[in-house]
Image (cartoon, rainbow, N blue to C red):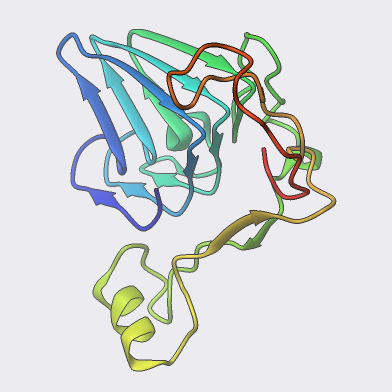
Length: 173
């Protein structure tokens, strides 16, 4: 999820009104909200993030704050995830409050020439060929603390456990 914007809450995702959501193998970067929850807002709902990276999002508090990653007023659970500004409880999570755990994206989101995230120029600069990709390349560089930190046992296809063949990729979470 990259380059999304909201006038209120949850630049990329707003989980609201009793929803029960699970997000698995996701990256949120370069999203913005004029209020809280640059990437994700969770209101009166439950949300689980598994094998996710939430980094370099923006809300009214700035970039890299806990609420620019996830604004929450209910239940959130995390496993094998990295969230900037947060050091969440749960299995296998990385501490997103320390700069040494920067995911080291190949090419992070860019706010384009006007410096405003998710504005018209971000798309028009791509179309015109002025820039290759302001929305970013979210492969992890080899020095990233997130490489090989995900839970490879997550059942992605609904088949019985143990039937998937997983290959280690040097640039995965």
